[in-house]
Image (cartoon, rainbow, N blue to C red; front, side, top):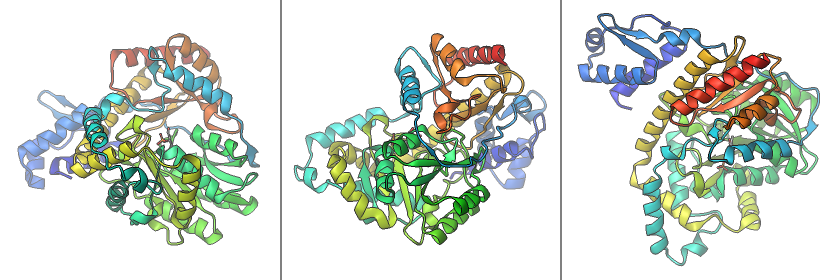
Length: 470
Ligand SMILES: Cc1ncc(COP(=O)(O)O)c(C=O)c1O
């Protein structure tokens, strides 16, 4: 972290926690230089950065003030209620309908699950892919069979160290994206008919994976800030024979919650005491806006019961389909399942990503990506505050690129999805994220695309449609 980034992290935290309120003055540049022993250019760089993110405003002769738009932000969502029973899952049709809408190029992609591809270093990756393919060691097609490229697994083990976890290279299994890793882990720890606890709302991919394996979902309410509610989980574990948990602890999709560290520890202890495996679905953790990466629950695992799944799809190389699992005591089982499912992950793609990570440019890319995502999120929050009807609530995630909106109770999210699609705007309606058809008045919006007049107009248009139903 550079000095200016430290200052940015500190002030954005104070603003977001409400310690510094909208309209309040920040310390003058001179005062900060003296009190912190920083150079003027460091303080100015930090203030300019906060200004770019929309958090502060410069006023002639008054210095810097906290941006007034924070005052107009809608409240945060309330979240879900706990179910009485586990349910069979059937979300397939709705999910495919919505995904079809997001694939059309003409659509404003607010329902998409991907950030803009323009935010990734695709040209450099393409060069590396070319080099790798030209010089591919013919033996790599054999040595890179599961568990996968040694060099890529070594690079992934290094990233675990940076995030505060120790994972041996031997434990890591390379897969075709996190989705394959998650499916294989699920297969390693469950039998059809078992109950699996998931966040509520949850990523529709988790519901599809459960449906595919004939599992029942037990939806545990998730908090828009802090992730799965552990008191509720504990009560549910007493009542239901849960075979495994599948949780997204960092920047949960769709709510954006990030579980505090102490809670992660408690989660691991709670499950270890009952011998229940935790599948940790962790594809957004590199996209944090704070000072440090969230430490995965895997870091606290002593029993080998945490199966951690990650991916490069959201932070580096969307189309390369390279992800991994670090499945603890299930590592051998998952490597074998991987072999029987698809033999191996694309070898040139594995080697190209390993080289990119080895070159040392990843951190720089991630810093820019995080800054872009945070600035875009602020712009979208601001526009939602302006254009959506009174009573709308919206999440304020500290990472990732999803916003979760709870609209007034009379708004039908599926109808809103249909009307928006007619206007070439895609959205992700709430019922996609539940096995019980919950969240009928909620939507998920993607803030992962550079802000533009087109996106602003789409938000205005959605706000009007929602207002007409409210
Ligand atoms: C929470 C979550 N897990 C896993 C995935 C799938 O990741 P991948 O593209 O690496 O398969 C997604 C994709 O949207 C996701 O949101």
